[in-house]
Image 1: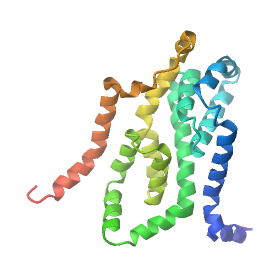
Image 2 (image 1 turned 45 degrees about the horizontal axis):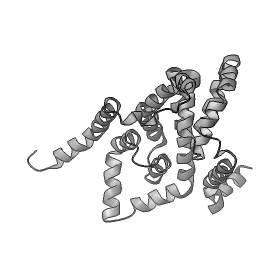
Image 3 (image 1 turned 135 degrees about the vertical axis):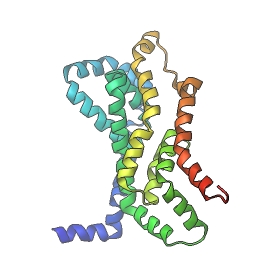
Image 4 (image 1 turned 180 degrees about the vertical axis):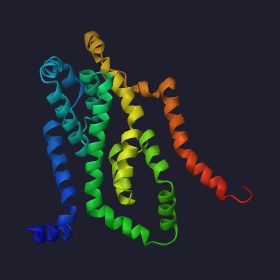
Length: 244
């Protein structure tokens, strides 16, 4: 039995099986739930969700984390709504903890799937490369913590790509999980707090202002954390310059 499992893992299909399963799950999820993972669905089912939470709190919390994990793992179009739901159902805290846990688990699933497939081979090829490719990879390797936190704090890249790129660069799983968990915390806290105030939004028949994260009082602290993440890289560059 063990030999059979080993042979499957070594085969091309076996190596890509996790990615294939995620792709199939993503296609199925989009076709079944893509049109329903939106604010209107949350508004229409808010009373039923609250009733279930009040009756089965632990099941609701664990079920929510599982659903959030699946949304992220399969890259379904509902992560923002899920974050709002976490705040709406469980308040800013522990809602933010549930949101971050689900997002980190889902991101880790994508990371491991990519690592087991083309990620490991691509990382090995980059390691054996020469010239510019090798210098770029070495530069990232020397500043992995800074780069990982920066990708999470400033979501310039789509979340899906930010999950894949570290797998292609041979980032250790522990480092990836830690940087993801803490790196997405500021943004998750903002949206969870918005979700915690949805009762008033529902009462007014409005939709939440998701542009809140770009307000100066919120954006500037996030930019400050990003600058802090860049500090080790800046220090290394300065130390490498002659005369410093």
